[in-house]
Image 1: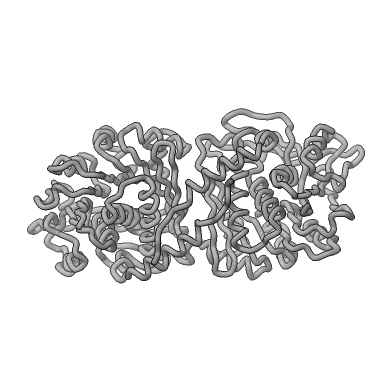
Image 2: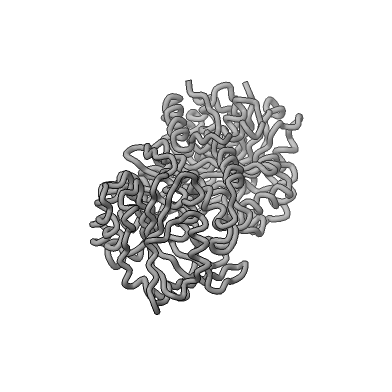
Length: 309
Length: 309
């Protein structure tokens, strides 16, 4: 079993899309990453997060039933769980945030369970950069791979802190606009190189419906998003992608660039499911044979044979 | 030799980008398509177009030196050549048209040379749809494949005419926003199906820096754009893409979907060169070994191995 430490939010989300709206449902970066990574056999994922007393037992059961360790999930007595509410526009690519209530998240000091401090892979979901860094510092053995997800918010208010944290990171996942903001470069090739110089040897740039790129030295690999008839709810797609990426690498134990190519495809594959229903619903019902079937679609979508003698 | 009829504009372009500006230089859809298709061996391309007396002999020589037949290039005595001028914004994805002078193009009635009326492949560059249709009607043998490129302008002012023409088309190439406009659907999968119902068995949706998709029944294939450090001038990229697609199909004589996948990659490959310099400059200097080298980059960018037992 390959240990995978996942740090991030467990949350309540209330989502409105052109297809309907939800009350408070299960959400959060760590939740999506965990449910995605848990699809891989021989992976032992542990979520490190914080919630309030209002976080339903049923949500915790949902995680543990999928063999996700929740020892590191702190439940604050009398506290309230982080809440996010958003409304997607008709294009499903842009959204308005209607509410953000940090609640217990405001004083989140993640504690990695003893048993997981030697984990091979650490996946840091989007959080304040200093909080992400504190997790790396708790590891008793240097992880094979530390993956960090972040967003423009931290570039706006805590850029130096983010840059400090990036020095300890192997893989950063970031969207295209954020990559441009962080690097000050419009070309993603140039942006990736500048971000590489900040620390991460691997730069993953997520382009939503336009797929994802991974850069390493002079190598680039691209995983498209699966063209879908209907995107029902994009919430958590990026985290599901990251969870698939991390989960596959944990399963295979191989962090070569060739293997990261496959990991990117797995990430894209799992994200293509996540958007089919509200919240985590689709990930909860996902089967191995459905994943295999969809991977075939990715092959048909991208593989070609040109002989270059 | 496989005959390829190319209909479209030969033009003067004046281009301004963040990297500089040009005086009137060689441009036009037929020009880019022709220079791109002429990269393929055993293809006999003929340009059917119209220019004025001001069109330099040197530009015609440039085409004929690449074995592009120009019998169908009408030179109007005393007439002036179609002129377009545009300025690209910093993102290189949007542009303002500064000037459009139709000149001789206003009364363009394309005449396919006798020798090319039995061509296997017809590539109709962006033009008024009825003018595109008139070309198909001149063919004495039903072509194996008719490819049509069009744009939102014709959807705005000549939608019925466009729909009439689409009934006679095998492959349409169109950008994502135009596909959405033509179909009234946001999802590109649904849009492609609706456009398919209008006539074309194959729908190619161009997404610029985000690559291109081809749809055929339930099959989809995706060719990424090569991530580039610097896009110098995007003018003609779509036409170069179409020329590579048509040229490869003409060369191989195989219009199966599997082969169209390769054609899409060739199109994307040639387009990646076109944007490296102003106008047609890069296409003019292009060598076979450079193309081969770049195709390898496309393979590295997209090919992966996942065993699905």
